[in-house]
Length: 302
Image 1 (cartoon, rainbow, N blue to C red):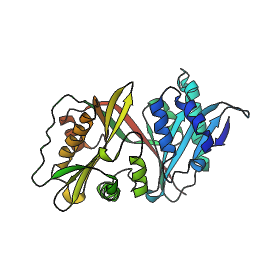
Image 2 (cartoon, rainbow, N blue to C red; image 1 turned 45 degrees about the vertical axis):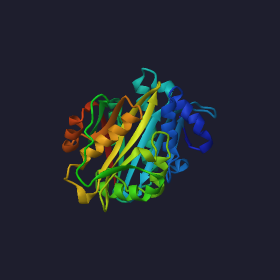
Image 3 (cartoon, rainbow, N blue to C red; image 1 turned 180 degrees about the horizontal axis):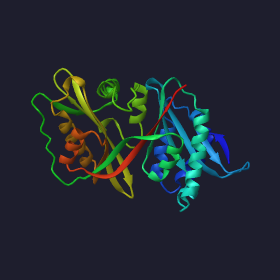
Image 4 (cartoon, rainbow, N blue to C red; image 1 turned 180 degrees about the vertical axis):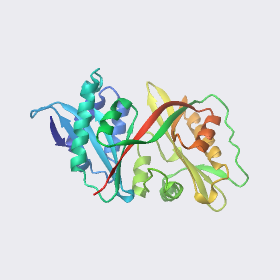
């Protein structure tokens, strides 16, 4: 097997090899590779079979978050392997990519490396290299069939986002989540890029405000599969100055209402399994757990 550095002219070839039959997955991966400050030609490696024309086997992406000393790993096994029943082959491809990554990775002091797994068949590969399970997240789903309580406390109102609110959203998101596990503060350029993506838009961010402040927001996404629209609650953030006032429930309901108005048949979200207050809110709104995601971690000291 041979390693190759990613080049932008390889993008279509890579997407076809990873997800030839899944246009939505192709778009998601493409937008991930092209996000600001990622530099995939430096931080993405491809594994191919031997020979100049060797078939692509897998891809591993390292997303650096130097501000918080973290690197996130994403990997994809190409379809001709991932569709087979040969789990040993898939695990071997992943292990070879991970070993190469960990040898070449350039880290600062006390860097952590994270990777999220939805398939625990790969867990042994990570554990062999010293990773351990750090967090379990739940994916929860709700059918859009029940009426929503959209009443807000006196003095509060909601408004849909516009392009002029990039700075407001950046500041509010960073204030809401800085210090939370796995969150790296965003720049306005990163926020603007996400809002220009295929699954969300400015109007899909619902802001909650009073007479003086923007106090919270709910950021929604929409995905289409076989002409069926499914919504997602990506983030609900409340300014530290307004926590403990029950605002998350109202933001959630307005986000759900927005997705219903856009024709979504159901909505999903992801939540830390240890975040019981948030889970209680989601369950009360009709969400149920559908699957788990496992975050593995490795501490790397220079």
